[in-house]
Picture 1 (cartoon, helix red, strand yellow):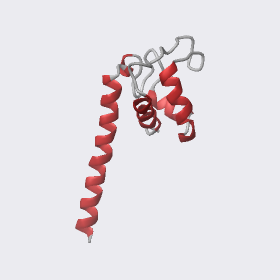
Picture 2: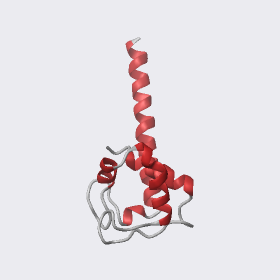
Picture 3: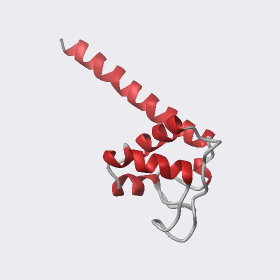
Picture 4: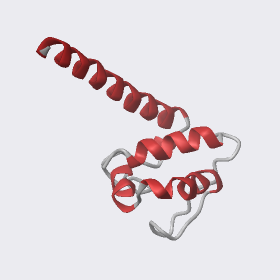
Length: 102
């Protein structure tokens, strides 16, 4: 029983870590990491700061923000629109990953 539980927990950990790495890889592939870091402000806010400010119910609005760009919430530097380089599904995946960084 204990061995089965331990094995299940190890597999679950690898799946979660793999998902996190996959989403970070997507952020790198889509050049998000040019302006953002996970844990420190770069040009845009740190993803952990974004995660602290928003909740899961904000995913649709944040997905739209990733696609359309915007300014004024995190300072004077505008985020460029990403339509054409990021699909709506990818934007939602990125936002979901960012909010998981709490």
